[in-house]
Image (cartoon, rainbow, N blue to C red):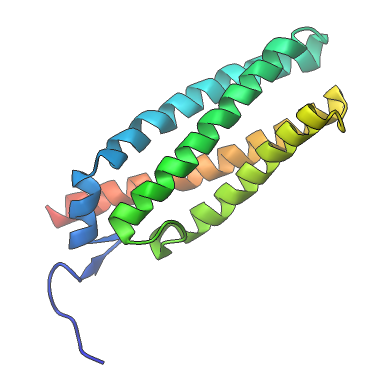
Length: 162
């Protein structure tokens, strides 16, 4: 096996030099940078509506709409994130640098999808749906934390490379 010593192939933290260049030059980085905080804001608003429903029994409809909006943004960020990974790492998902974040993203998506299935099929009661969405939102917070950790690591890597 040949030893690759090209600086574009050297791994420094999350990214090789070439991957960092692709990350910095793709529109998908900007798209993720817009969608991630937008999704978090929608999450906070939705969580407020969900908590209101849980505490008062009022506002189930608006909570439902907010959960659907949050889920739609989740699907959108997952698709655009897969495109970003393909551009930066050459594979759609499960690039080594983001493997566990992607794995946990599927848990988050599965829970949100279970919520939608239960809602649309009528197989889950409103209270059961709220339990599912609380689990989905807890998983989302963990996953968001994973990505924030990686963002911090990437920034530290950029400072070290400079």
